[in-house]
Each structure stands twice: as C-alpha cells, then as structure tokens.
Image 1: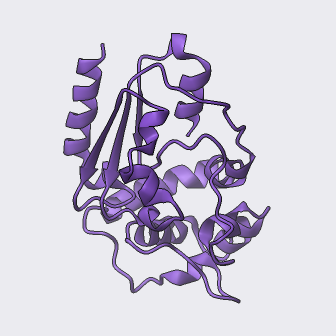
Image 2 (image 1 turned 180 degrees about the vertical axis):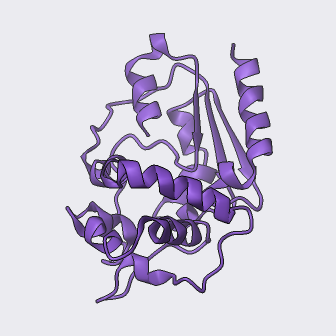
Length: 204
C-alpha cells in the first residue's frame, strides 16, 4: 500500500510497482459490513492486539498468525473471543513454514515488538488520504494467490477480476497463483522470485 501511494506521488522516482495480495484502492477500504470480530476491526482498536498477543509468548503469536492467515477463511472471532484464540498449539503449521522459520521470525519480533507492524496495515489503513482521479504513470504488477482469504473481503474479488484496476493502472499485469495463500511469496518463493525478476527485466 505505501508503494502504491509513493508511485502516485513520485512517478519521476519510480520505475514500476510490484505488489502481492492487495489491489490498489483510491481511498480507504470499507469494512463496515464485516462482523465486529473481523481481525482488521479488532486490531484497529488501540492496544487491543497488544493485549491479545500479550497473553502468549512471541513464538506462539507468530505461529498463530501463520496458521490463521495461510487459510482461505477470513479470521473472525466470536463475541468474548480474541483472534489469538482461533488456533491452538495442536493446530499444525502450514507445510511450507518450518519450525526453523518460526524460530527466526520469533527472534526478530522479540526485538522489534508488534506495534509498528500493526500500525501500517491496520491502524493507519482507514486514515489513508484519498487520491483524486489517481492514474499510475508506471507499470504495475500484482501477484495474487487464488486461495488468499482476502478474496472474501467486500468488493475485493470484483476489484481484482472486473478490470476496474485498469482505470487506475493502464499498464497493469496480474498473475494468479492457483494454490497460493496470503503468504504466497513464502509459500512459493522460487516462483515469485522468477516473476519479480521477469518484471524487473522487462522494465529496466
């Protein structure tokens, strides 16, 4: 999302935009029709996620996030339930995410904490400045997993498949990965690298 914004504001400093999983929107995404337990609405609340995460060690939090966000279902908690309650230690990790991966990520989040990662996609999302008649002057390349739960967001699939993004990005290419989930770049790293390197080669 910051890459889209930067390219619109500074086309003279941008050769192209590559994005995975999120289509461009000229204004903030509207999640008003989603249930109260929808993870974005929950994590938008100040300190809600911190309190939820704080009940567990960092390794458990990262583990749960990778389990929940690699599924094709949207993470939604029931009343009286938190997002971290949607998976437990008996739930297996995705086959492409190893215990060694988990150790490495947990070590990094032990140092950084979760506040900044929560800020950009969740707490600042609804404060995005609306662009008036946005038009990308550079090539835009999107890679999307077909099994990404984001397809179940309101209006998401229409935005992806109707061609509406072409009105904002005339030079647009979208590649769908049939078995890809929300973490498609980690699930299929070699395939994604080849796609991105091909895009860079085509737009030196």
